[in-house]
Image 1 (cartoon, rainbow, N blue to C red):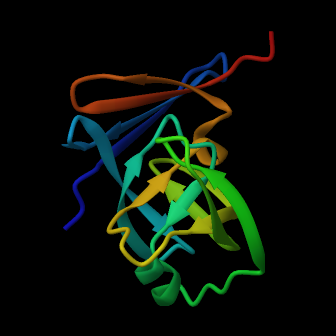
Image 2 (image 1 turned 120 degrees about the horizontal axis):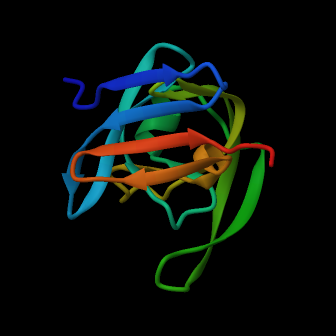
Length: 139
């Protein structure tokens, strides 16, 4: 059952606001993220993660195989080697990123992380139960 809803508002000056409704997981936003246009998963919106991380279960369901390995630094400062793959498309709210590079988590990870390689080009405000993404102006 999807928890998040979104609203996309575009103004005449081309500024764009995306509002993602979420539920909280330990104080962190969890939103619905759709992969390849047809498979939706709850993912933690992780403002501290530079990359998006999918679970083994997600990789299997999406039929994604790693093309290589990458070194990633975890929140606790530890470095780990993880498989790296490309997903055709990743969508949350009105925002879709094509050909997004993702890391594949170890088997014990239960929920994926949506990282800055997805939302990093937007200014973000996290409110009580809504995340606002605003397109950055070029000035």
